[in-house]
Length: 401
Image (cartoon, rainbow, N blue to C red; front, side, top):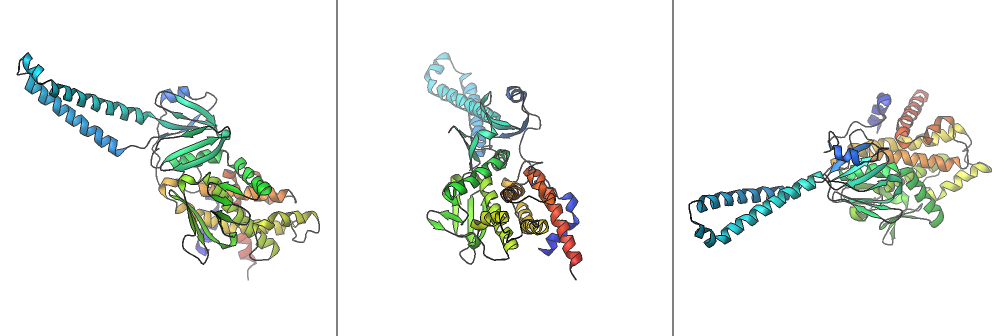
């Protein structure tokens, strides 16, 4: 931790985002003219994610083409030396050769058609390109649920319409899903938090989150009992402190809105850290967060109106979560890495969680000037939080004897 903080202080001005992903996404260098012409004029194509190249289809196609060419060669050589009657006597061989040729041709056409299909992502809209036209253009704000598994992305709109892609490029499905979720993450998080206020929980498939903790199939943990929540290509893994290595596993196919889920994990962990700092009490629960914030309207027993105290509490959240988010980003599976030039989903999740914490605090007390950056978009929050964290660390080092 000490070495990591030293690294952050040394590179504070250059750590607005992590270095580019370790892998490159298989996308068009230049967007197909047909796609560009069919995409809404008011929008711009950002990424074109191709289908996953099927190795077995390529192998089968090559095999059938070789067999068909061999059969044609043998048939021509044999029949060119025979009479017309021989053609009639060997019609089965000729028909079989023709069938092989037609099948090989069909495989070639299918491979070409599949290679042209893609998920096309713009700044404000996205669509599925079937090789010749778009099967509908949808705005990101219309998406209610995002599922991603086995290199496929399933999207459900507020109207109940479903869009499910074929298997995308090996390192394209997760970046595409995160890109779509990020476009609407602020509203998705606020909707989930409102669900906590209204129903006491928010569902992410079989996994249910509440201010008390996660619940899966009737089994619950308190947040203070959770060691870690990890997201991989295979699903969500929850570990319990002092317990088994994996308390529960939720398959990726059953997880809804994985980026929103990740953000709420940061949110609940952040509220715990904030409460511990402002109350001085360990093992506090996120359930007490709103009550502590509302206390500022009365006696203000936790001194939330003291700007220095409030800034110090939020800085403590940054001090714990910044190194963790960076560590998780650096250890991220290559298939989960973002598109080139985009921010890591871990960093976006942490930043959006801080924004929501600040929004909830602002309902009861004025946010200090030094924390006003938390009202900025998530992608802009990270650099400001990093700077405040480093400044606070530097001040602490100076004051230390």
